[in-house]
Structures are given as structure tokens and as C-alpha cells.
Image (tube, rainbow, N blue to C red):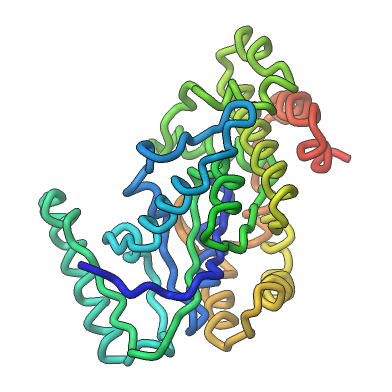
Length: 323
């Protein structure tokens, strides 16, 4: 199915996993003039066009391939990409069309639950947008930190946002998910260990000496976010901290929306209110902000905190959390 080509100026949120990116992305989705695509690069990895991590300066000369990949992601309407609840009213879609679209998503999810994933994976969900209406596209990824420079300098203009979360909170959340069977044990880092950041910080020598999951996760956070932050600085993107947004959601998101040319709708204020006040399940959008910010402080052994601190403090992006 062919989908309408919307005007560019897309908002792209980049982060590590377990950084609160889905909650912040759904706050953008709650705006009645946006169209949100949830991690389309999980469905389409784009390995035929771009590496996940660039080695040296080989990012130059990949503009055409980055543009091709972004264009593919923008056309993705897979169930996983557009089926993340809650669903919101949109100005560019009638209420009847919104209900019909939600029904298609629920039907596709039903096929998944019935084990018919080969069939459900072929379903595209139409936007059902009225003629003459052009929603602002919002996309987020937890897999593209190494691709920011390539994507941000392609011919498809994007407003890039890098979301950072305290490295101790990230490590603690990842390990908690692993104990719950929700997250795999940290695996090999592959090309991330060949990046400029890895060479500058002598990461290979340090990782050769350890199989400690805390240390490997801390190194992964440091190297990935060093690469991403360097790209954001070079391309004029925005860096936000999860802890700042969780502490003052409306104030921080109002500033971010304004910076990106979005007004502040009642629907976003309502979403923030509905998603706050109680702690939900591991992947839930419902959160007690104080628990989300400080859980690691109560539960993470001090020896693990020191390991994380020792590793991430090797670069300014990590030092800021332990100043």
C-alpha cells in the first residue's frame, strides 16, 4: 500500500533502551496534529544501506543511502510501528476513521495472539488522513544512536532529539528487566568497539578484562551516547534528560514543543496526568516520576554504582551525572 508523502521537518527522538523514550514519544503522539511512528527501524533494520555504527569518518558520502533509508522508515505502517497504545484523536482524521483504524490495529493484534504472525506482519495500517491535512511526523528509535549524523545530514530534514537517562538508572533498569526475563543479557558490542569514541577511551582494553554485566552495560551506555552526542553537536540537534522531564513533565515538554513549533494542546496535558501518579509494569507508560527517577538509588548496590561511575566518568557526558 502506498502512503501519502507528508511534508518533512520530522521530529526524530533517539535514545538508548530503558530511557523513557516511549513515554516521551507518546506525549508527542498525544498532540492532535502529529503522526507517530514507533521504532520503525525494528521492522526494517536497514542493514543493506547503513551500518549501525560508523568507524572513523566513513559517515561521509552516505547521504543518498541515508535518504533512502529514512524514506523507507517514513513509509512504514507495520502493526508494530503504528499499533502502540494509547490512541489519540487527530485533527487530520475523522472520529469515524480513527475508530476504523483502531479496529484494524486490534484485528491485526488478534492475528498475532492467534500465532498468525506471518499474516499480521504483512498488514499495513493506513493513516486515514483527510485530504489537505498534513500531520507533523514524529519517530523514535532505541537502535539508531550510531546513525544520527548520517540521518541528520541527509536530504530529508529532521529535528533530532537525543534523550539521555542517568547511566545508573539505565544499568539498574536493564538488569532488573533481565532478572524478570524481559531483557536479554548484554551481548557483544560489535562495531561499537571500533568507533572513534571507543578508540579515544581505550574501550577494547578495558572490556577485554571483564565479563561483568554492570561494566559492559556502563561501557555500552558511555560509547553509544558519546557517539550520539558528538553527532547531535555537529548537526544542531537537541539534548534532553529523562530526569528533567520526569521531574517537571509539563514545564519541560512545553519548552520542547515550543522549540519545535508545536502548540500545547489539552490532550497532551491530559496524557501526562493520566500517565502519572502510580508505577505500572516494566514496559508500562504509567509511572510515578519520583520512583522512576530514584529507584536505582534505593535498590542498586553501592559497589555497582561505583563501577558505573568509574567507567562513565571517563567522558564529560558521564561526568555530569556525578559532579
